[in-house]
Length: 144
Image 1 (tube, helix red, strand yellow):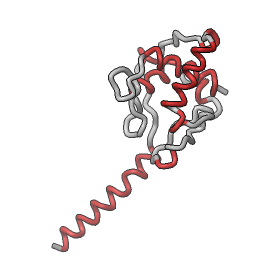
Image 2: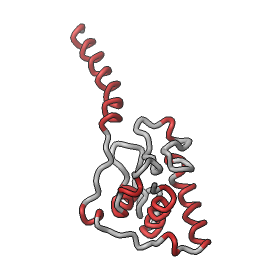
Image 3: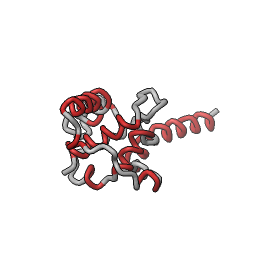
Image 4: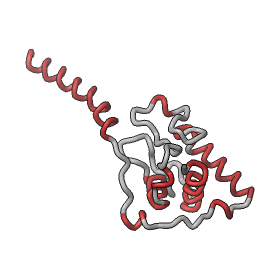
């Protein structure tokens, strides 16, 4: 019985320590090469006012609660997350990421985080065009 109790306590300690370990070591996965080389078919500067307003609403409805109004990874839902959302406005972050990388992560999510996929067939069910518009918005608004 003493051994069973000790094993139970050890198991609980390991389970309790696992989230802290995963948060410290988490890295967003790289998109496969065929995605890395993709170029965004959407030019943000070529969107008309109605399309810009539409993508701003899309960001507000799908991204802002985690990534924040100003892209700082500090949205209202971020406080309770073990692995914090990416800060799009961190110096160089958006500018250094390929369009294809941002598209792929939005499409598929980031494993072992609360960033779930937003692509067709997911609970969020965004079209590829909507995802490309979000990528254009993120790059336009937050690349510094």
